[in-house]
Amino acid sequence: MLLRVRAVVGLVAFATLGFATQASAELVFHNGFAECWDKAITKPMFFSAAQNSVDGLTGCVPPQSGTDPIPYAVCNTAGCAGGQMGCQVTMHAPTPPTGDFNTGAFSGTGTADNLSVPITYTFGVTSSCVMQITGIGLTYAWTNTLQADGNNGKYSSALATRTVTFNAYTIGGNCGGTVNGFLGPAAVTNGQTAAATAIAPNLTAATTDESVCPLTP
Image 1 (cartoon, one colour):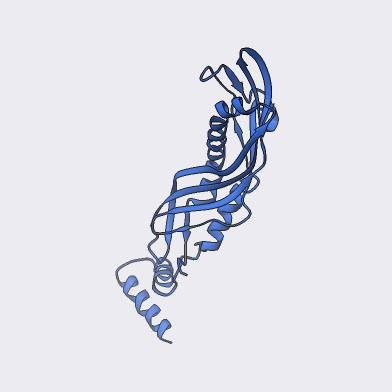
Image 2 (tube, helix red, strand yellow):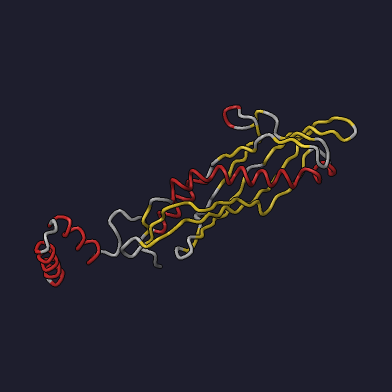
C-alpha cells in the first residue's frame, strides 16, 4: 500500500507540473523503487560476455624483418586465417575475468595455442627454421571508462585500454639457442601485441554501452 501511495503522489506532482504521465510513471518506478534499470546487465553477465569475446579468438602476428642483431625475416608465410601472411595466435579463456567497478580495471587469465614462428636468417649463410613458443599462459587486461548510471549501477562508455601478457612460455623448435636468444623475445612481444589487437573490437562490443547493476556483492 505504501508503494502505491508514493507512486500516486509522485504522478500527481509530475502531472501538476505539466510532465507526461507515462514518462513520470517510468521515472518513479525505476528511480524510486527499483535498484537497477530494467535494461542493466548483472556483473556475472558482464564478465561472461568479456570471457566469451576472448575465448577461441585468433590474432595474427604480421611479417617482420630487420637486420639487428642479424638479418632476419619472421612470419613471412601464409600462416593466419584466410591465407593472411603472418603467424596465428589463438587464445583461450576458460574462466570469467574479475575486476573493480570503481576503477574500471578488469583482467582474466587463459592460455594460447603453440605459436609457430617461421624464420629466415643470415648468420654467415642464409638459413630457415621454425621457432616454437609453447606452454603459453596469458593474462588479458582492460579498462572501461565508467560513470554513474543515475541509479545504483555503473555505465560503461568506452574501452580505454587493453593488453595481453604472456606470463609463461617456453621457446624451442629447430632454430637453435643462438637464433632463439636473438629473436625469441621479439617474437613473444609481437605475439602479445597481435593478441591485444585482436581482443580490442570484441571486448569493446562485449563491455561498452552497458549499465551494470547491482554492483554488490
